[in-house]
Image 1 (cartoon, one colour):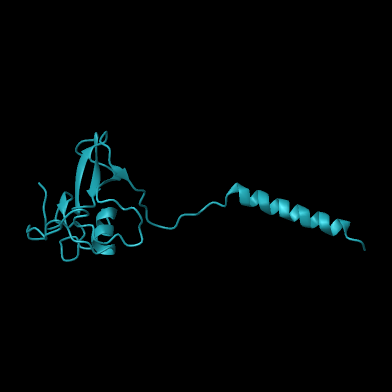
Image 2 (cartoon, rainbow, N blue to C red):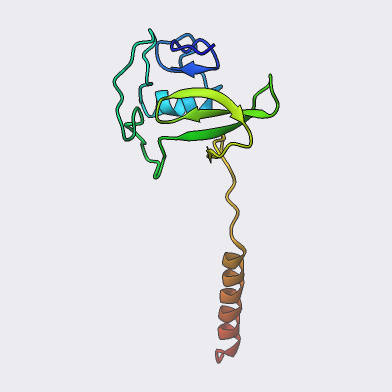
Length: 143
């Protein structure tokens, strides 16, 4: 069963301030929606409607993210009771559920920690070419 008080993996207000698991990062997208962006769910922690309306419903703050859609996003975590399913987070209502993996939803790679950004090969190629030209210029210079 789903809950509005954030006490289960399914439902609304998961990780939201003032709930049983406030601030938990177990659901990265729920944490982003409620804690980082400060949005509210379709229902408050008592199960009462919050009054979110179309077109974006409860996604009132997208922060620095461009094109964040008020729609379903796969979380990348398999749903343990049924391995044909996976968890998703619904950014227009602020709820989390599981769905079959063959359903079309948005995807967003969300991972914690620093990631090394590789230097493109073109930069190495340009740099070595530039050093070569400098070397040629120094060799041709009269002494």
